Amino acid sequence: QVQFVESGGGLVNAGGSLTLSCAASGFTEDHYAMAWFRQAPGKEREGVACIQNSYGTTYYSDSVNGRFTISIDNAKKTVHLHMNSLKPEDTAVYFCATDYPVVAVCFLRPIRYKYWGKGTLVTVSS
Image (cartoon, rainbow, N blue to C red; front, side):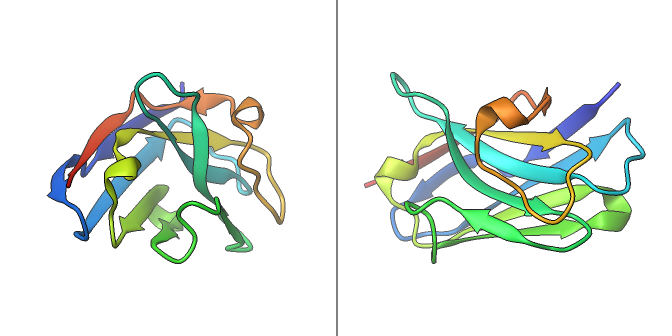
């Protein structure tokens, strides 16, 4: 059974930084992708960033490219999302997700991800 432990959400002022972490367990696949999605109140879930573990390839949404960085610790199956220059519009519940097998590249389409965390709230005040 795939499980996630998400952490790092909270309240931050605009322009500030925050790092989210997500530790996954319950699978032994060698090649997989991990991603962060977010959902603001009244809006659809959107992809933020993803990373493929063995090639290290990443992909970012246009809205966060240049401000957010995704990284992975393969030994711990833990993905981090370093968020800088936060804006009020970044306020949302952030979800961790994983899919396998995934070789070479990852995608930011929710339908591609089989397993999801419960989410952690990020609030950016103006």
